Length: 217
View 1 (cartoon, rainbow, N blue to C red):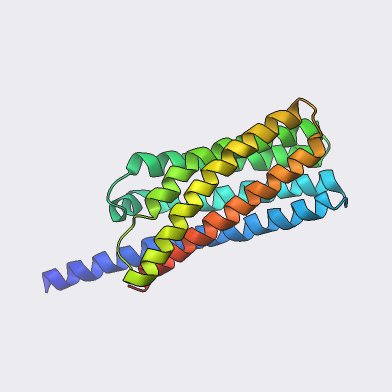
View 2 (cartoon, rainbow, N blue to C red):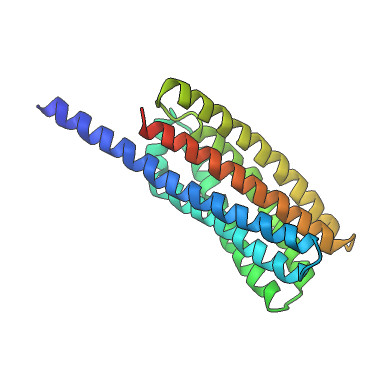
C-alpha cells in the first residue's frame, strides 16, 4: 500500500511538472507568434516603431511566461532531466530578468523615450537571454520518460530549438549593436524582433510538445 501511494504521488508530481511547464511554454509560443506578426507588419511599413515597441513587449512577456513556469518546478524538472540544476536555474533567471527588462524598455520606447536606442538595447538584452536560456531548453529535452516514439520526436525538436535559440541570440546581439550605432536601425530592430519572436515560438512549441509527451507516457 505504501509503495502504491508513493508511486501515485510520484506520478502526480510528474504530471504536475509537465502541465506547469507546458502552460508556460505554450504562453511563450503564443507571445512569440504575436511578436513575429507585429514585426512583419512593421517591416511592411505600417507604424514600424510603434509595432516594434509592442513586439518587444510581447517578446519580453514570452520569456517571462516560460521563465516563471520553469521557476515553479525547476528542481523537479532537473530531477526529471537527470540533473542540470545549474543550467536550468541560469536559463530560468535569464528569461525572467530579460523578460522584465524587455517589457520595461518596450513600454518606455512606446511612449517615445529614445525609441530607437531603447529598442536596440532591448534586442541586445533578448539576444543575451536567448544565449543563457538555450542550455535550459536543451536540458529540458532530456526529461524522461514519455511514449518512446513521441518522446524521441519531441526531444529532437526541443534540442534543435535550443540550438536555433543560441544562434538567434548571437544574431540578435550583433544586429542590436549595429542598430545602436545607427546602421539602418529601424529595419535591423524589426528583423531582430522577428527572429527573436520566431525563436520564442519555436522554443515554446517544442518544449510544449516535450511536456505533452511526458503526460501521455
